[in-house]
Amino acid sequence: MINLVILTSSRADFGIYEPLLRLLSGAKDINTKIVAFGTHLSELYGFSIQHIKKTGIEIIAEFDTAPHEDTPASISASMALTMQSMTEVWQKHNIDLLVALGDRYEMFAAVASAMPFNIKVAHIHGGETTLGAIDNAFRHSITHMSTLHFTASEDYYNRVIELTGSNRGVFNTGSLSIDSLSTISFLTQEELNEQYNIDFSLPVILITLHPETLNLNKNSIYATEVIKALSTRQDTQQVITMPNADTSGLIIRDKLNLYAKQYKNVTLVENFGSRAYLSIMKYASLVLGNSSSGFIEAAWFPRWVVNIGDRQKGRIRTPNIIDVPFESELIENAISKALSNQIPYVKPIYGTGKAAEKILKHILNEFNTN
Image (cartoon, rainbow, N blue to C red):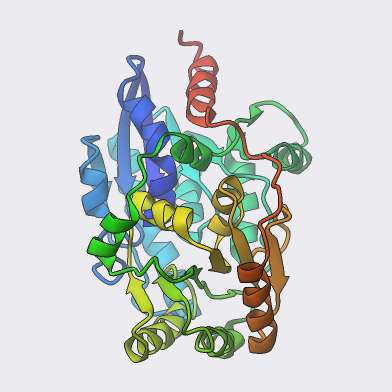
């Protein structure tokens, strides 16, 4: 029996994990548990621990390690608290494999704390590049600490091999997000309107704006430029999801909250959950901001993406993505272009919806279990 632990630190990674969790929960040779930390227990970020509990998978530890402020010192303290809290888990439980997803600072801290215990790590979404965020260094560090690597595309598979110097344990499985999109029962426009007051008679812009963590002193200006551009498009329904717990994130939150209060065509929600979020993307005319969901998920539909700034600089570009800097006039022009032109063909590069099956197979092979 393989004792496997899923590390989840936010609503974002948990939503991606869901297809894999469904398979793992029924795997006879794997004993799956969850460790929930980061923002899952934070009321400010939507108390997403409630969604984890609905899976029925045992949570062996849960920690509120979310930063209390959005300063560098608070982020650093959050990382230290995560490492200290995780140490107790590794001492108490017999764990064969940790599964870590992505590039967040708290995910890095959790994985780093397990290194002295010689626990194997499987990393999902390695090999990607985001030059506008400190996440880039954390992602590559997790890659170096991992034994198994499950990448979202061929390009990212090759980059992990470059980083590690070996193809041992490196597999291009495709993205778990494509699994979700291939099997999800989307909410209808009527259901979304009833739950979130979204007017689909207007073109819908789905907006997620995160801080650029390598340009901390400019995030207030960046948010102002985006809001200035959006305020000129009162002929659209604007649906805003709130930013992650990053440095300078609270500044952006405050500005978005104030903007939403001023305009009736703006709907602001802390945490949609993956089903509602992807359903809104299905009906949206445009995805705007600097979220990674504008790359993999938006390419699947496909949907136009106005990607702003450098946070996602280095990711694979598909023809549906319009890159612009944080300048209101250029953002306005990009919105107009997207809303007035047909979406181009986007070649599938992130898998065929079988990522969870491939990941499970490779985990079983690693432990020679059939």
